[in-house]
Length: 400
Image (cartoon, rainbow, N blue to C red; front, top):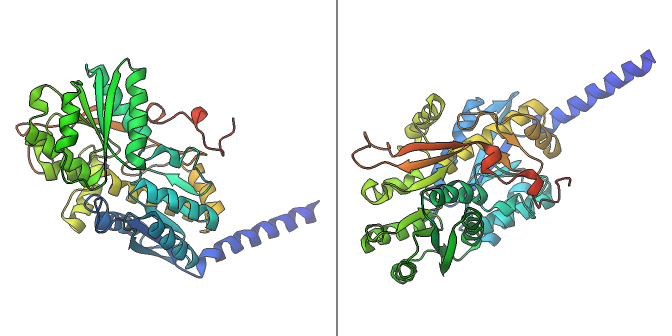
C-alpha cells in the first residue's frame, strides 16, 4: 500500500509538471477583439486594449516567468470578420479572447471558441442568450447583460410612476433582446407597453422615430440601443423637447463616455444601470487614476470589465499552473471574482458572472463638482437580484 501511495504521488507530480510545461514554453496570449473604427469605438476600442494592458501589469507582465502578451484586432462589427480573427488567433496560440462589443459578433466568436476549445470572455457584449441557449463550457459573460439592464432600470422607472412605455429600438440582436426583456419587466411590474418602432444601426436621423414615439403618449419613451445610436437619439430627443413635453426617457444602456459627449444639461436626471463607476470607492478610483494616465479619459464599465476579466483569467492561470483551457475554466469557477470593480462575485456554470449592479442618476450641472463627476448612486442591487436566476437559465450546461 505504501508503494502505491508513493507511485500515486510521483504520478501527481508528473501531471502537475506536465500541466505547467503546457504554458512554460510559449507566452500566455490574450486577444482584445474590439471595435476600433465603428459605432462602439469610443466606448471600447483603444480603451479596452489599455484596460487589458493594465491588468497584465498587475501580474508584472508574466506568470512564473512566462511572459503575457496582449494582441488586438478590429472586428469591424461584422460577425464573419470577428469569427475569422478568432479562429486564426486560436490557431496561432491565443489562449483567451476578451471584450467583443456587438452581440452578433460575440455569438459568432462564441461558436468558434467552443469549436477550438479556447476561452472567450465577454465584457462589452450584452445579450443574455450568451449564457442562455447559446452558452458554452468555455465562455464567460463577465460585466453585465440585457437581463440586468432591463430589471434594474426598468423596475426603477415603473416604481417611480412610469406606467406606459413605448420603445425606440435598434434593429439588431442586442436591441431586440433588450426590448423583449424590458417589456417583460414592465408588464410584470404592472406597466403597459403601447408599441415600438425599430431603426437601422448607425441611424443619422431620429426625427421620424421620435415623432412616432411622442405620438404614442406613453409616459416613458425607451431607447434600446448602444453606442452612437444611443447618443444620437438622446441628442435629437433633447432638440425635440421630448422631456419638456412631459415624457420620461428611459435609456437602457448608457456609459460615462456617452454622458461626457452629450453633457449634463442634456442627460441630467437620466437613470442608468452600470457595473462600475470610477468614484464609487478607493479601489475604483485607483484603477481610474491608472487608466487616466494611459488614456486621458475615465474608464467606463466595458473597459473596466476588460481589466476585471483579464485579472480573473490570469489569477486562474496562476492558480492552475497551466493555461490549458479546461483547467483554467475550472479555476475561474472555483475562485471568487474579487477585484477593483467586483467583490465576492461568482462565475456560474452557465458562464454568467454574478456581481452587484448599481442604479445611478445623472447629476444636474449644479450638482457636479467637476469633470467626470456625473453620477449619484441611487441603489445597489445584489447580484442574485440583478441577474437571471440560475434555475431559470436555458443553458444546456445547467443541471435541472
